[in-house]
Image (cartoon, rainbow, N blue to C red):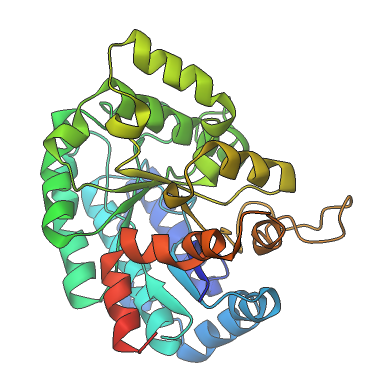
Length: 341
């Protein structure tokens, strides 16, 4: 089967956006928060939004299951304080649960976290536990920069993050490293901020000893690993200069890249440089790049076409499409086995 490890709910009912706008305005004006009870999203609205978009594209492109999470740019951890983030996060995660409940064969859930600047990451552990144990989610998205592009948090290898990692290990779930919107005008959200964060996270892992302390911790760095595969020699050289072990031993037992790379040469480079066992199929649909490539006549984010075109053998493709995701997301593997898949 073909498992897409990177999908976001970007076609949400309109009232969700109305609520978030009202919530953001209340933060700005220091006025009372909108009531969650006033948020109206019917099952029919959710069903229609998915059938006309993500599910239609699954059928057209030949994928089976999408690991589905809230809109990444909408997480907005820089907006308001911790109570605001908690309420917004719970609303978004509950909405993903409704999507999965309506279409259990098409989606499985991954949660956003109620992160806030200057709030201990360990405070997010409660929501992770709720989503995994009560909602059946299989992982989370972890934002290394809750400030929205100003990078005011310690590196991911700092003990500041350890209480949250302890919960990840206890629940045996991975995290996708995924920033949210950029409020720094120097960094376009999807074209700069996202790729910067992917690359930055990898370098942080090289500099630290996180996986010595948490040998079973697992992270997916999205968007093909940012700039990392293209500069693989630089990072091997830096690891050597910094007296770190080889990347294979020091980082790549715990870190995986997805295939959200939107042209064939980029995918060719990814599989040439990175071990097949560290690559998970992902498309990010419906996500950052939604148009048709005028050079090919196909959608940029139809990443399955790029994998199908690789000359790596069917077994290697199966690892990218399915087996690696089952290994990195063991709770997903358990769900699929329960369905005899």
